Length: 167
Ligand SMILES: [Zn+2]
Image (cartoon, rainbow, N blue to C red; front, side, top):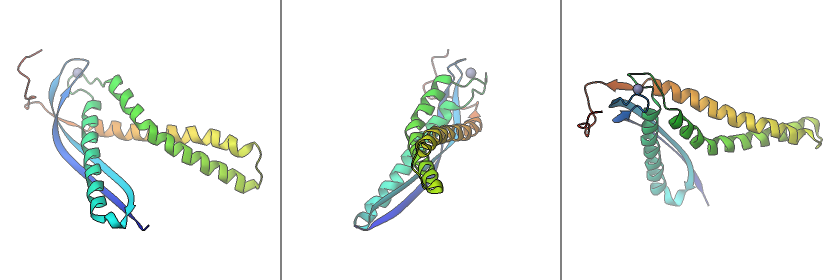
C-alpha cells in the first residue's frame, strides 16, 4: 500500500473573550492560534487525506487560540491561572511521554552500539534519558506558550457580548 506524507499548517486570527479568575476582569483579546499536523495516508485516499489534515490543523489552531487566551496574564492585575496552566501541561503529557520513549530507545540502542554489550548500561541510559526528554519537551512547550500567552493583545474598548450583568 503506497503511503503519502501530508503536512498541513494553518493560523487563525481571532478575538476571544477573556476572564481573569483572580480579579474578575472580563474583556476581549486578539489572539493568533497555530495548528500543525503531519500524517501518512494511503495515496488511494489522497483528496480525503489532504482535506482531513487541513481540518485537523484548523481544529488545532482554534484550540491553540483558546488555550493561549486562557493562559494569558490578566491585563489588569497581571495574574495567570495556575489551574489553567496545570491543565494545559497535563494535556502535553501524552506527546511528551511518546518523545521520552523515543529518546529512551535511541539512548539504549546508542549505548549498546557503542560498547557492543548488553549489560545494565542500555536500560540505565533508557531510564535516565526517557524522563529527561519528556521533561524537556514539556519545558520547551511551556516556555514557548508562555511567550505567546504574554503577547496576547487586549482590547479595552471591546466588551464580551453578554457583559451586561456587571460584577
Ligand atoms: Zn486580573
